Length: 98
Image (tube, rainbow, N blue to C red; front, side, top):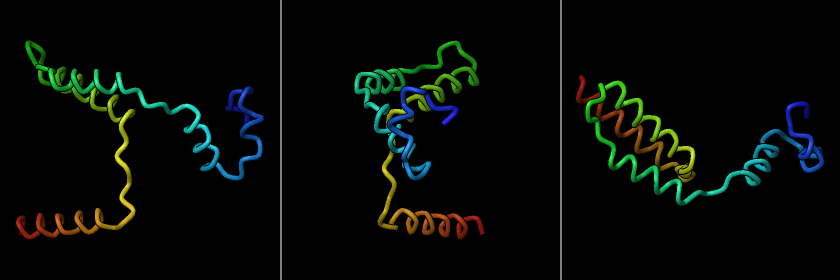
């Protein structure tokens, strides 16, 4: 409670776990920003190296991707298919490298 904004104390004082506390805070403050997402996608699509060194260009592009990632979350797979696909891909990669 020492690190939480005093205005929020009443709404989070009786939360039973840290996980539920973070879910509560996330619901409160995470707002989809469609215009920002669109601007970032457009900036990534039009990004050109120009006269920048590769490392500068890569850093700029990674910064844009990381910022976009904060707005767009890929839902977690709960059916187990993703794990099966990853295992199948790894087995193919291992067989190719052998």
